[in-house]
View 1 (tube, rainbow, N blue to C red):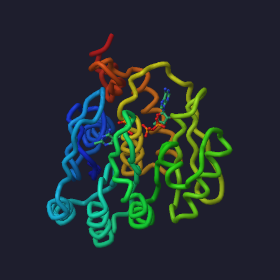
View 2: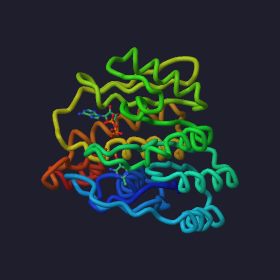
View 3: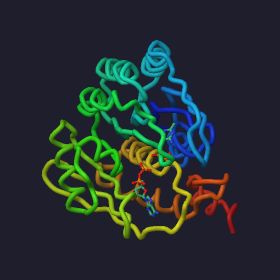
View 4: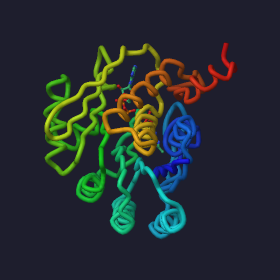
Length: 267
Ligand SMILES: Nc1ncnc2c1ncn2[C@@H]1O[C@H](COP(=O)(O)OP(=O)(O)O)[C@@H](O)[C@H]1O
Ligand SMILES: Cc1ncc(COP(=O)(O)OP(=O)(O)O)c(N)n1
């Protein structure tokens, strides 16, 4: 069985962060592991508190995994603070995992800063060069490039700018624009486009976490980058289509719709 690791924050409501990542890994039939960078108190209505895990405990979690278990794929999500990023980068430079997907989580849909703005430059400097692919959403790409993005052309310009910062592949998600949900992949040479009809739902909590975890799982399973992205886009589209009206706010996506359907658990 392929073994996949997420280094990210905990979302106690189960829609985003570590919990979404592990559900996504399970749905893909890979063995999921986690290094927790921060514990958040959040739900479908907002983020209410964050406690960062110490540098030392993050280091120990990473060592506990890499010193014992082969890691076939690694995803990085919420990294909170400069010292969190620095210790992750130091450990990854030591263990040199090949397949690293960086989701540069900055601000939650409810507007909470999950990344200290002072740490944005460190994330770009220390983590971008270690990643095989980086998966910003539009607000994150705007922060990274200081460009405003309202059109597909502006997405392309921003993806190019992020590539020039040292990313090997840039997957810029278009969920925050209107009309079709079109994401783009830039590999330094050409653009590929991945579109799906926009699904009319408010329940999109954790879509970015889910998508980056699905890319990671598919890469670990041996798919090429393009195949992994196509499969991840199909997965997130089904997960949003069957998203769950849990809680009073922005509900989570459904990770197991296809599996449950096949098992006859959903009529
Ligand atoms: N309403 C929607 N209908 C279909 N796909 C969506 C919708 N909202 C987001 N997506 C897709 O979900 C994925 C995550 O997108 P996005 O919302 O941009 O990221 P984030 O959750 O990081 O803000 C992308 O593939 C995007 O195209
Ligand atoms: C612990 C934690 N990590 C990441 C996020 C952001 O998740 P995302 O997939 O971008 O979805 P929204 O929260 O923005 O709906 C998070 N909320 N919590």
